[in-house]
Structure formats: C-alpha cells, structure tokens
Image (cartoon, rainbow, N blue to C red; front, side, top):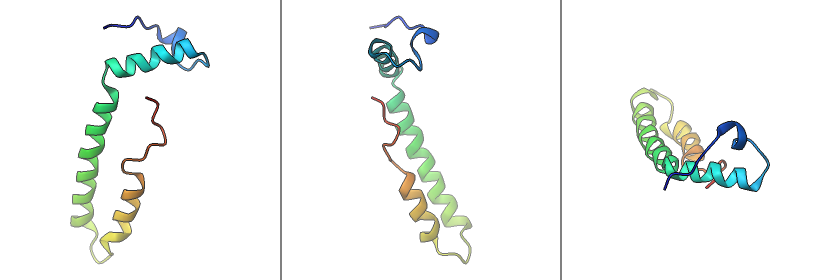
Length: 78
C-alpha cells in the first residue's frame, strides 16, 4: 500500500501523524532491511581489513571497537 508522503510537511516534525507517515514510508522502502544488509556487509569487510592490516597490533584492539558499534540500536525508529 502506498502512503502519500510530503517530506516538507512530515519529516522532522514533532507531530504523531507526521511521525507515523515517515515510519510508514520507511517500512514501504524497507529501510530497516536495507540497512541491516549494508551493516552486515560492512562488518564483514571491516573484519577482513582488520585481519589483513593489523600488523603487529592485536586484532582484538580493533575488533572490540567494531563490536561496540555493530548491531547497536541507538537510532532504531521503527
């Protein structure tokens, strides 16, 4: 189902109706799934780069940081 959306009327507004329209658009565009896929691919690339480039430094130094930001829910809206 397509939800009519006007960015200037809805995005960034502290109004429940506007918020629901933005969330509906996010769902329609499957942004959660798109971001999840992107995040997984990026994390795999980061792990590979850490393995290849860490040199004499312990990989855990970099992996521990990567794990802190991987799959966090700080900005989950929907």
